[in-house]
Image (cartoon, rainbow, N blue to C red):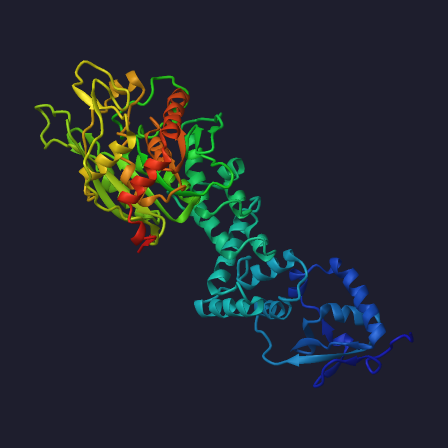
Length: 573
């Protein structure tokens, strides 16, 4: 191809241009600060070949500054045309010459923002444009809003005003923490993460209550997993809480959770806050009796895992937050129409009620759960209070019902009152309690008759009455291993109403396996978590009882008599 000697041979792609001698055209210092000329040689060579082949080029864009023309857009084209020995170049001359160096750089950025090939250059341009780098000029709110609007228009979908502001915060964060491994601004520009996910990461780091820092992130890598989309924000906050708990207790070696599984049940041994459910687990609900706060010792000193025991926290709110974290962990693996049912009792310190029930309701609501109802479990044969106790006898416990969404599963129980024929035998006990002080207690010779009698005795209103054979106590718990337990009948109406048949219920505080036994007898599946290895054998024994006690014919009859099959409320609003 013939060597190009002047602009008459190479035609611009637009009209209304001015031909300017190359000696009057300059590259601004601002461009040199924003771009790396040395890294552009390959691009310039390709552009040179293209212009030689086509004979065309786009005019460069300039501002007139005194007797010179300073390039706003087209520096690489200018350098290419110099290599082609052109003495004159076609230019578009803009009006309104910028008054300062910073404004001139802004115009350069506005012309080049979308065409910049590398992420680092885009970050450099945006850092100047949003005044994150050190510069002499400051912008007012109106000027910032104009810049936010310009960036939104340039980048389009996903770059609304709020997201541009989040990106700006990410740039500031990366500038203030140059050695951090999160690289939020880079990941946003590379479309690895959304601006919303970056905002959540920044919120977690700046939340004083969560007490999580970049130093902790180096070890825990919780945000790394969150930004990699391994789990959602709620899970990330839960992991931070678990990490801080372990750090505060100076625990470094964590025993992994062991699993015992069968077709109808699973037992997970270990800290319930570290629960990893079997693959593809989908829960339909949670039913559990949480530990009493600072009332019962669930293990002897030096028992392995005792340091993870929930219920021994110094402050009530710490206890409640651990309970809520457990429920959030379950909710992450739960269907949207799932429910959480918690049996609990208030605690008293120095004669004053701690307010555990009220605290739990408040914190569960803060966590995003819907508070559905409170049911009272009224206990007969209640233990008398001491003469120095200045309050009425507390003969009940609460059962709180929460849901993950407003549309939760509910199957209405109906009233049925046949002749009752459950066998009651002297000296026997449903839960294995023994002692001469026992006059009588239920021995379930026909378990489904006992269930029917219980459902007939209660109109399934907000008060349930149970004749319990023995009070829960610290000493009894350590003696017989059934500390903190509740009667097998208690979960029955809740499992029937809130957990669908063949659905899966999780009890994060396994204790005796009571929930599991009831669930298995009602043709539900169950997952039990238990902190202490010493309880696993007995829990497995109880669950195997539930499996063996299941009678399909009796269960179907029970279901037909007590569940509103013809008028089923699939979801409650």
